[in-house]
Image (cartoon, rainbow, N blue to C red; front, top):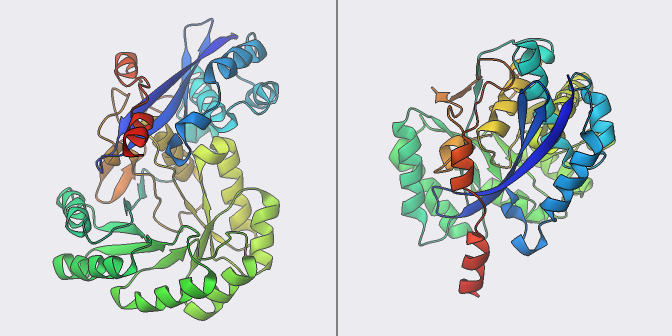
Amino acid sequence: MKITGTRFFLIETPRETGSISEHVMIRIDTDAGVSGWGELSDLAHGHPMNFPDFEVMEEEANRRIAGADPRNIARTRQQLGGILPAAFDIGLHDLLGKILDVPVCALLGGKLRDRIPFCYPIFGVDEDTIEANIQRVQRVYDMGFRRIRKYIGGHLDAEEKFLQKLRDTFGWELEIKSLDLSGRFYWQESLALLERFKQYRYEMAESVAKPRDDVDGMAEVRRRVGIPISEHLGGYEQIFRYKQAGAVDICNISTCGMGVSGCKAMFDFAHGIGLRALHGTTQELSIGTAAAAHVCAAIDRVDMPCDPAGPILYQADCTQNPVQYEDSSVVVPEGPGLGIEVDEEMLEELRYKGTRLKQMRSDA
């Protein structure tokens, strides 16, 4: 069996907040008629005009992997070089799982759990959006979810009003896993606002220093605030450096940032040097979320609730059987590969139309 080629699908999906996110879905085909799917998730962090030329990337990827053995993921990744490495790693694992008729978690050593605790994201608020975000919490609360994480924006008085109303409405039954400061504040500012919001009870804080490589400032916050500190980390050297500096308790690691194999390796490394780890997100669709679930199913331990919530956050998906959530947990999909079937008709419906770029131009 050999890989015959790949196709890229640039799509866009609306969030329940009304914003638009772009994604690239990749299909890897073989001469046996078996295909694997990968995902480059949530391109909304960048300006659409700065997107790479995905047609050229697709052409080059086809040139490099045509004829490759789908059972040799490591060799195929080497051949691809730097072309969407995480997305292809996900797709190659999906493909190999389908070929062998086993789930991706079996390729990583086996399934240790069927469900992964998760939390729903609530983004920064201002005075005009407090009530709308309380209603967003109400929506997922009514679905049976009892855990959120809160991004803190630049309107701190509004953020405090939101947190107060959150506690008034839902009491202490609703958990706040984390306050995510997104590297927005200098460490002294982070320390002050974490103390200010301590009365609303949250379990940890994330990205508490600006710039985000200010390990000394991060370590100072960690020393003074008395709660676990997390940061988005990737690579052995970076994780070890933050550990040595006393800057973090928890590594935030993402499959859609590192691929299936890379993410599993980083979890194992973090645990091996005495850190905790959580699975982060860039808000993936069901392919990326399923990949995250399979990694979390296979790691030795789950230290903290994971963050992937895209299949609930987005109002459209390109799969026939989206990832399911129950009782504040992600359900690990069953079946060979990722256990997710892509709906190619829906891919066409969601094909990129430049909606976010048009919105940006109209707002300018």
